[in-house]
Image 1: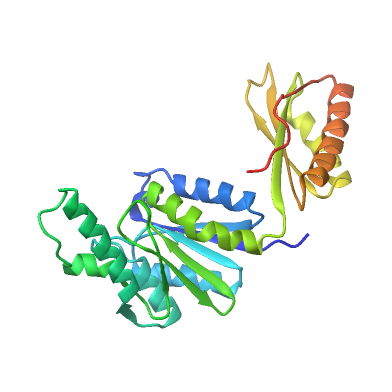
Image 2 (image 1 turned 30 degrees about the vertical axis):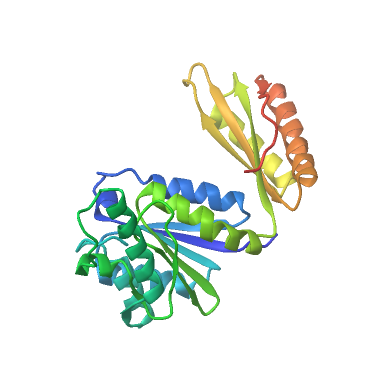
Length: 277
């Protein structure tokens, strides 16, 4: 079943040196998958315009339906994502009046709340409203820097802030509805636990079940020790409705359970039913 494709590009030197855990990539991948979009690549790149432009051009050549960047939209000198996007697309950067009004409204609010002494659109603040030509600003419900959306020859290029709360808020308000229209299927998942069977013994059994159930993906996650194996087995599928998904997952679980038991293992089915987010 063909699914729309997304590539995720995370921008920030702090990610490359291990200072910051890349929770944005994990959150986005999970959320995007539940909306029926397949994530094919996650790339991390530093705060350099040329390198940002390079990875965006590489992604565009693969023609995914969506490319989403996180990080680098703020007012500081090292926030260079929009410069990288502009260079990748060979477009000029220009102050977007709609984006500028979004930024101004935020600082008006901060002034009324007593967080700043006066409303002033300084160059760093105007920088957050300086977008590649033709870009559409996306409202930021919890922060200052707007998100950005461009349509590049059929690929939606979406730039989100790196602050997790801001990234998630813009995604839910402006990006998720776009993905729901594109995604023709939903993602469903469930898990069981296998005890008393080593992962090396379990692996060929999983391969066999996946071969017999081509729309089901199965992944083992060891939780115990080698001498006392305890493995979570995660099942997932994409389908147009929950009935189809549950039938697929149920068939695969039964088959794997029988094989595990034949090989001396024990299966514990979790109470959690197959679910989609």
